[in-house]
Image 1 (tube, rainbow, N blue to C red):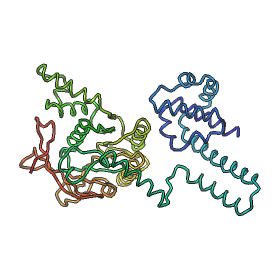
Image 2 (image 1 turned 90 degrees about the vertical axis):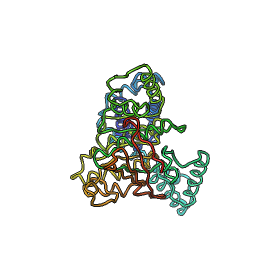
Image 3 (image 1 turned 180 degrees about the vertical axis):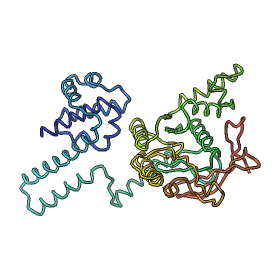
Length: 407
């Protein structure tokens, strides 16, 4: 007991020393896994303060409950922050064993017959082993299905509108848990499409919560592209402050105010798969995330992989799981395979691994007309849940935005 109590305090101290550890351990250990009331209280307080985006340290947590100050102080002296995940697994395992042991003692103390006792023991064991997992019985599945239908009916849709009429006509929208891939050859305009999608959403009434991971552009470049999209002023002039008159300044200010009011997070310093997973899970815990973008996936790194194929294969499968876990649409921008780039095939083939096409709920291919390079063909090559189709987009406003071409 003394060892696990020390481990519990070491975890609390690790969370106080580095808030990044909170995202890493939240789905491993729960408050009920702690053996002491002090541990349960400290863990709950830290998590709730972090979820509400409040500052977390000994003083701020201790101010919420002064009686906890000595426990928190001792915790930081025991902590080794890099071991937070290891601490969590140990605490969760001990908590599970403790609940099974206590349940067994209660059953034996009840004096019931051996058949009843055996059934009760098995039930406790099954409950602990399946903790946190959904009930797979069809009755429970149907109940969750009905709840989902009711929520969709109340909202009026399953997800969020793309802002493009040709996609609306095909009943294609951003649905929770879905993966979209957008592929195109170099300089096709993948980022321009992403920017247009973001602007469409932040200008919509639904105002979804958005996470953007940009491995290519800086945050300043991203903002300038969005402001350019909304104003028609070239992004390089916005970025350098070269606004010609008061009208342009007013337009830029209005665009920036729209961005400031949006529910969007932009990351330009995230490159590893673990970091991508962390920012999405953090957003999910701190108010939720509806739509996410990764631009672009070939720049995401997974150090444990032994080859580019293995790397992209693993990233694709884990991003698919991530979308389901946080119940968001994650839109991944990707380069296309060399065969597609050379015109040898028109299939949905993305660079690195075939798993990207396999995990896609919606797979998009972008192409530019050679004779009319201001026109972009937007083709739905894969739609796991509905119809395929295509639309034409045209660069407008000095190449600052994309608009649908009405055929």
